[in-house]
Image (spheres, one colour):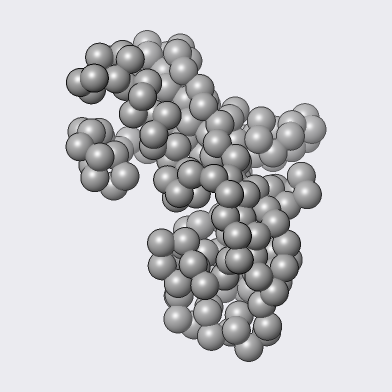
Length: 183
């Protein structure tokens, strides 16, 4: 949606990567959270790019709280645990994109926005989870900043698009350099 809104035609392709298995392997290897996000973005882009011409963008986002990786919550109980752990603290969204061509990486970018969550009362968490509903289960932090999730924060440092999961401005710059978009 972000690319389409920016006037960039793109086709979404599922890479057929077992993300949980890959993340488990990266964590066993002791990769830092940002390196896990980058490795997963590259894995996805390489896999899709090997089977099709043109530029392929792979991306991933992992939430880091004190170097602990948070994945998408498992159910509303998991979302509650995420919010309780993030309450009153600052976390980083390790947001990686890799562009591949003919199965080889040609460009990488890592954005690291930092978000400070206000202290959340148990009553607020209850009402937030009820109002936000299951769509938050598709996000690493159990929030969507573009919606009700905006009420969770006191401070945000970084690019809004990167928080949404795609470092759009650096990507658009690269596409202009490659001649995909007019400069």
